[in-house]
Amino acid sequence: SQQGEEDPQALSIQEGENATMNCSYKTSINNLQWYRQNSGRGLVHLILIRSNEREKHSGRLRVTLDTSKKSSSLLITASRAADTASYFCATVGTGNQFYFGTGTSLTVIP
Amino acid sequence: EPEVTQTPSHQVTQMGQEVILRCVPISNHLYFYWYRQILGQKVEFLVSFYNNEISEKSEIFDDQFSVERPDGSNFTLKIRSTKLEDSAMYFCASSLDREVEAFFGQGTRLTVV
Image (cartoon, rainbow over all chains, first blue to last red; front, side):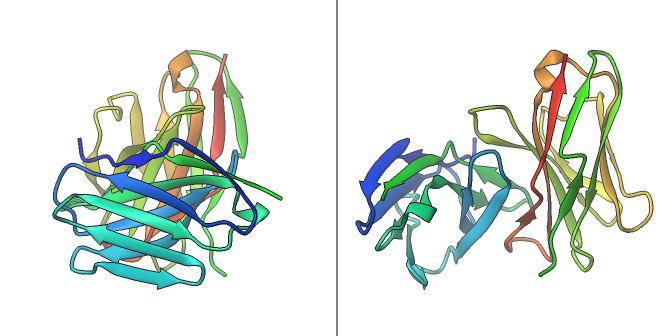
């Protein structure tokens, strides 16, 4: 399976702290993307990192990619209560479909 | 900002009935997808569609499922004879190109009773 697996499954932090989520995958990828899903809602694209990139920033988000370990991490700095959501990594391989992981449920306590 | 819209937001149907889930992708996008998410589980790929034909489909997408782009703007998912286990949130997505970000709709919650 090409699907990613996120770790941890659930994470609870205080507002202002940083949150780190990890994703591991199994096959070669062209890029890896992170999405957020608020409860019962659609998926919102956060950031895309290509296989030849090692790190990427977008606002309070920092993504790393290690293709040798087939892993990625998403760091959210200075978390806010509004960051409470599930976070998914999605791998995009040679086909044009996205494979989503199981997600990390993040709770930011005000 | 352009967005993917899905209708209805919630559909309740009896087992064995046909349902059609509708999606309007972002107008200049070329790739279209359907995904589903059973409550509490991961988002699962169903099918991708490009150039008016299915480009890839998963093993979930069996003969009971079909997709159409009937008029150049809508993208539909039909389930011919619904089963209880088809109850899930169904997400439509579109992207401008391969290997770029996909934009997802808010989903249709399908409940089969």
